[in-house]
Picture (cartoon, rainbow, N blue to C red):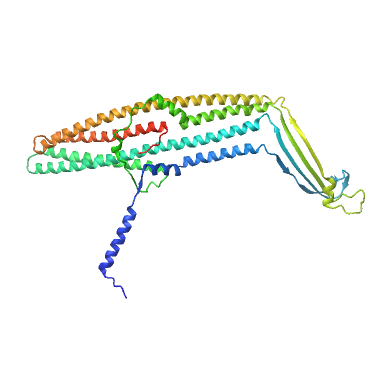
Length: 453
C-alpha cells in the first residue's frame, strides 16, 4: 500500500513540526526557591574552593598522625673506582679499577619530642574543624544571598505586572481623551497630559523589566548558570505571609545565634587552634629522644678470601660476611638556639590573644547586626501598614476621580495626578510587602531556622 502525500498534508505536517520545535525552544525551566538553593550549594565555586581547603587540612591532620610512625630508608650505591684508592672491604690501598657496591637500610622513630607530635595532631584536627566551619559559613551566607535575590526577583516580577496594568489604564485614558478631544470636549492640553501619562507608564515598564532582568541575572550567577539560559521563577502564595512574625526579642535571638552561628563557630575554632599552637611551640624547649637502627653491607670485585685467596669471592658471600647492624638512642638537648624557641612561643601567644579579640569582635558584630535586624523587621511591619493605608486611600480617591473624569467634572491633570499617586503607592506596597518577608527571613537565618517561602 502506497501513501499519498498531498501538498496540504505536507504543509500541515511542517507546521506541526515547527510548532513542536518552537514550543521546545521556548520552554523555560521553572526555578523554585528550594531548587535555587540546592543548585547554588551544588555548583558554587567558592564552596568548592572551601571544600578543597578542607581536604588539604585533612591531609595535614592525617600526616601529623603518621609522623609517629618509624621512618625507614634504604641507600644502595654502586660504582667504579680508578687509580689508587682504598678497597672498602679490606681497607687496603690498591691501584686498580674496582667495582664496589654499598647498601644500607636505616630506621628511626621519635620516642619523645616535648609533646610536639601529640599537640600537632590536636592542632591539625582543630584546623580541620576550622575549615569545616568556614565551609559551613560560606554555605550559610550563600543560602541567605539566594533567598534575598529570589525575593528581589519576585518583587520585580510584581512591579512589572503593576507597570503593565498601568499601561492598560493609561491606554484607556488616552483613548478616551482622544475621543473627547476629537469632539471638542477636551483641550489639547488634556490630550497631551494623557499622552504624557502613557509615556510615563511605558518608561515605568521599561525600568521594571530592566530591574527584573538584572535580578534574574544575579540569581543565575549564584546558581552558576548560563546567563543566556531562560528561567521562570516560581511565585509562592503570598497570602500565607499575611501573618509574618515581627515580635522578636533581640536578647533571645542573640543568645541562640551565638550558639549556632557559623561566624562565631569559625572564630572560636580558630581561637582553639591558636591556643593549641602555644603547646606546639613550647615543645621545642624539651629534649627529643630518637630510637634508631641500621644494617649495612658491601661488595668489591677486588676482595679475596683470607682463608682461601684463590677461591672466588662471590657477591652474596661478601654481602653475608660484611653485613653489620647497629641500634641505639639519640638524645638531643636544646641548650641555646638564639632564642628561636622563645620567639616562637611568644608569637604563638600573641596569635592566641589576637584570636580571642577576633572572637569577641565577631560576637559584638553579630549582636549589633541582630539588634539592627530586629529593629528592621519592626520598621518594615510599620512601613507595610502605612503603605497599605496609603494605597487603599489612593485607590478610593482614584475611583472617585475616575468617575468624575468620565462625566467631565475633573480635568486630565487631576486625573493623571491621582493615577500617578495610585501607581506609586502600588509600587511602594509591593516593595514593602516583600521587604517585611525578607526582614523576617533574616531573623530566621540567625535563629538557624530553615529559610522557606
